[in-house]
Length: 301
Image (cartoon, rainbow, N blue to C red; front, top):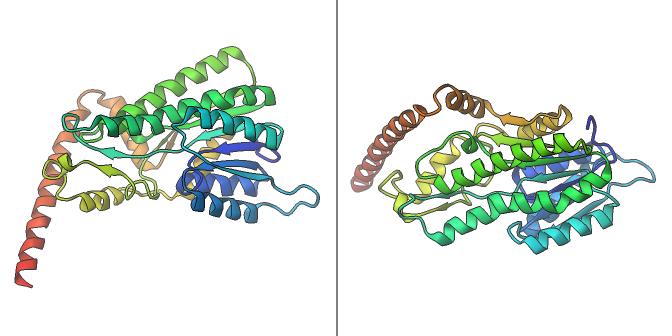
């Protein structure tokens, strides 16, 4: 797929972040959009921005449809895929982009939290892929783009639930790509591994209380520190993803942090874990010193 003009793209998690940036950049190229998110107001704003970004072509306005849904809901995803195909006449691309984050020790993790993140990050990708694949094949030219993470390349303490879902997306998508290659059906697949992207995922993440005192000094500080590692804009991430689709890449790494993590996991596939532990301990000591300094300053005030 060398261009997106007059194609139809379905995007989950379109209400903000990379999903919104993908929608706007695709709209600029004249790609029709089927957008989904749980956040109705964010979804409506993305639709407005995408429509405004579309080229003004007389007699061929951009068709933008929206649907408020939870990607973990299989029936809702199947219905949305059918509605999108009916509304647009076809679907060429599906971006399974919706995702959430969870920080917790394995020992202290609540099953409800684990089920929540698996439902969105993994099952959401599965539902989107299976729901749209028949329509992509029927279009004659299709592409599945599934969002994994830098944490689908290497693991980190306190992120086991997130790691599990993102490694699962990676394995699922790599197998899918191989099957599609064997089918030679006009559909391909790409797995996306973003590093730190400037989105709202950190502030909206769930942080279990067991992380406080183990790796974090407090919940909000943990979110703020996590956000400091976000070095790539959502617009740049979207640009790299779409270039990866044009070049039919199997894997897309976004950001120098993702490229570094990929190199580390390839070079030290087992030993990198000890390096992560060392770095985490160092960061914990820094956080503890900062907390003590803040406490002393507070008493003096």
